[in-house]
Image (tube, rainbow, N blue to C red; front, side, top):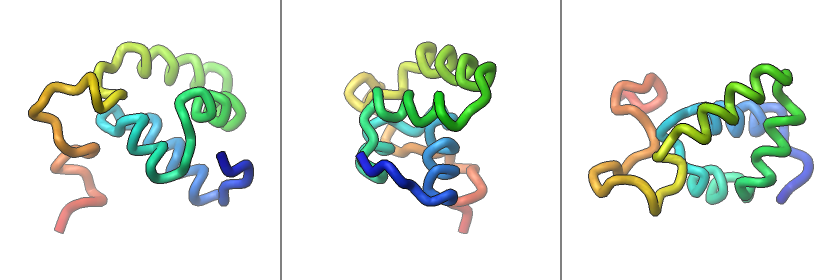
Length: 86
């Protein structure tokens, strides 16, 4: 794991971690962060209450690991998400 992410990279990691459809595998592929490393980064960067909410949300999501996803889910973002509109 890289220790020093830029402000933009840290912001993107946090954004991806909050997104329900973004798998932990996608975060690992893009930034080299394993699940335990992501938890540490989130704990460091978020307020305590926000971190607690994120952990609850993460535990409740069955989409976080690509191997556990239903076969029909092939992308990590909503088709209506602003970043991917053309």
